[in-house]
Length: 188
Image 1 (tube, rainbow, N blue to C red):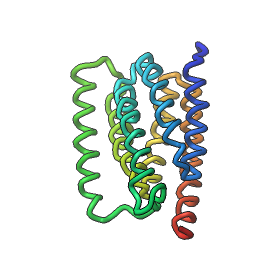
Image 2: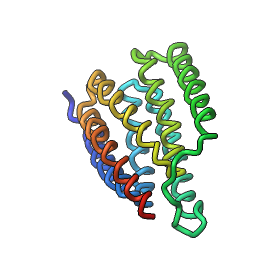
Image 3: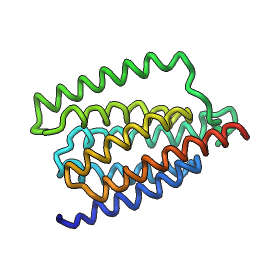
């Protein structure tokens, strides 16, 4: 196994990101800009092209999330944690399906990816999860639990052991994160 310092650094930033997300801290968005910038290179080198592409989206979404958390609430810096409105579920599901199938098609037709379906699944669900996080919807944790579990296996398969360990930890923390946000939602 080649020691990949960029992957290790990305893992460290990812841990900081997770801790800040767990606490519902607005500063998660700073780590949310740095981490994808690192993983763009890690995933490209590993041939995980959908994950490479999703990190470009993460950079853009982190900027959106930062601004939405700053000015999206009724009072500055006061965006509440809420349940996902019922009217959002069908559009989110359709975005997931279209993204999943579109990304899989691109990976199969135009890349040498040997994991197009799983790479597409995690990427499409991440698109939905990141938007839900930016809106502070508590159900975003369910999307991340699924993504994290799938990514843990995918990254082991691709010999990204540090990243796999990070996503294994993400899986566990995401469960606790849901309950933490639920508690925060009830006291806000």
